[in-house]
Every structure is written in structure tokens, then in C-alpha cells.
Amino acid sequence: MDDVALVERYLEHVRVEKRLAARTVELYALDLQKLSENATQARVGLLQVQNAHIRRWVAQMHSGGRSGRGIALILSGWRGFYTWLGREGLVQSNPVQDVRAPKAPKPLPKALGVDEAVQFAEYTGDGADPWMEARDAAIVELLYGCGLRVGELVGLDVQASTAARGWIDAQAGEAHVLGKGSKRRTVPVGGKALQALKEWSAQRAAGRHAGEPALFLGRNGGRLSAQAIWQRLKQRSLRAGLATPVHPHMLRHSFASHLLQSSGDLRAVQELLGHANIGTTQVYTRLDFQHLAKAYDAAHPRAKRK
Image (cartoon, rainbow, N blue to C red; front, top):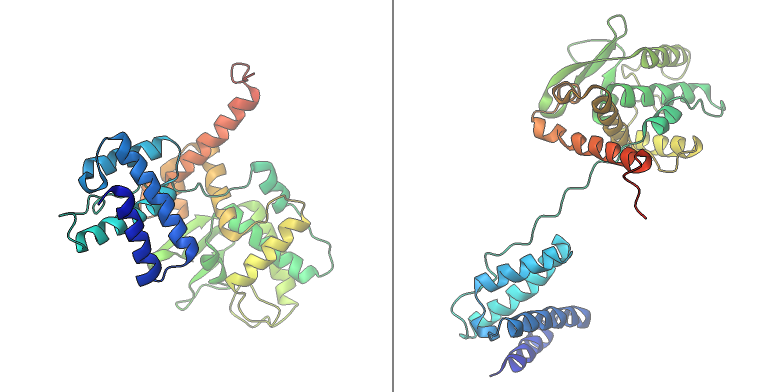
């Protein structure tokens, strides 16, 4: 049986016996057409394809710009074809079995530019509800000024206690938080954040359900949820004129990126973020380089390309 007949038999198998959708069968046919073309160029039949062939073709697809996800889908189609050939007794081993697609690079965390972050932090709102404006301003200052996770922020209480997950020591200018893995850490709180907290505390004391231990309260007087903070930041960033909706982790990323740009101290950024492994923090060196590369492309006379 020639290669064309083998492919047709397999497609009939997945269409009739496995009852796959017509679009899926069509995609399988395209994948197997690519396999047949590669085999023809290598002067081997589909039954003679070896593991080394598959690895070479994966490398060619990757160097040609195909994404890791796209290669993984193709390999899945090829793997299923050779699994079927094995069950039919036509091949002794599956040449695709141990081949994996190249890992896709991890996307860089999204961070605001310095000017955007300052614009967002200094936004004063429309003044319609001073209670909520004071609360939201303090939230932005703590997320951007201290690099807190949203879970650490919602866990803050007004006062320190054995039951508190976290609290602010305004006198010392420190935030004590409970991070991932139930690890406690202390981070400095800047003057802008302390001033915003002072204004929020005044509104909170005169407002809704002031007896609640949580530092940040929702409309119903209970502890503010992480979901509510996501929604408020998105709304606030759009009102502040930012092109990109802001979420809590974006402010944490901005904190880390801007601090690293200014200090170059990766270890200090690791400690402030509460990362157990410095490898997690190193992603911000890529953000820092990206920032420098943009500055170079925009400003250096030798960077300009015709």
C-alpha cells in the first residue's frame, strides 16, 4: 500500500470509527500532507520515517517561525497516525512518541510605563463619593508603591493582632503582610502611600461599618474582595485616561520593573516581592532590557533603520 492510500485509510478511520468532526478531519489531512511532503523530500516512505526525521522536521518548522503551539498540534496529528499504523501492524515503533514541540517563551508581565503609573496614582477621581475615592487611591498607592499582591492587600487589618493576616505600621512606615506559602514579610511604605492611607482612615472612621477589622471595606461594610478591586481598578484606569485597563498584578509588575530600572538591585526586588526563588524575579530584567531597547531605538542615531 502506497503512502497516499495509507493516509486515506487513516482519515477514513478517524472519520467513521472515531466520528471526529469534519473540520478536525480536514486539519488532520493538512498535517499528514505536511508529513508526506517532508518524507518525499527526505526520500523515505511514511512507513520508513524515523525519530531523527521527525526531530529534524520539528527544528525546520521552529526555525521557519512556526509557534510551539502550532508544532505541538502537528505532532499530535502525526502521533495519532503512527499509533494507528502500529495497531495495524505496519510499524514496529512510533517515531513521534518521544518528540515534543519547543516550549513557547513565557510572555512578559504587563507593566505600566513610569509616566502612566504616576498618572494613575495621581488621579483624584470625580469627587462624587469621597469615601470610595479615598479608599481606591490608598489601594493604588499600596499596590504600586509596595508591590503587594491583591490577596495580601485584602488581608490587611486596621490593627496588628495575632489573628491579623497583615497590617500597616504607619509610625514605622512598614506593611506587614502574609504572602504565598504563609510566609510573612515586611515592606516599606512610602510617603505618598502613608498620606493616602491617612486620608482613607479619616473617611473610614466617619463612614460605613467602621467597627470591621479589615482595612479596606466594600459597600456593604465587609472586607473588600479581590474581585471588587479588579473591577474598581479597571474602571479607575479608564477614567484616568490610560489606554490599557489596569489590574492589581499589573501594578505589582510596574513596582518591580520601575524599581529595578532605578536601582539595578535584583536581590532587593526579590525580597520586596517575596519571591522564594530569584529566578522568578529575573523576568523583570527582561522588562528592564525591553525598556532600554525601546529607549535606544527611539533616541540613538545608529538605531534608526531606513
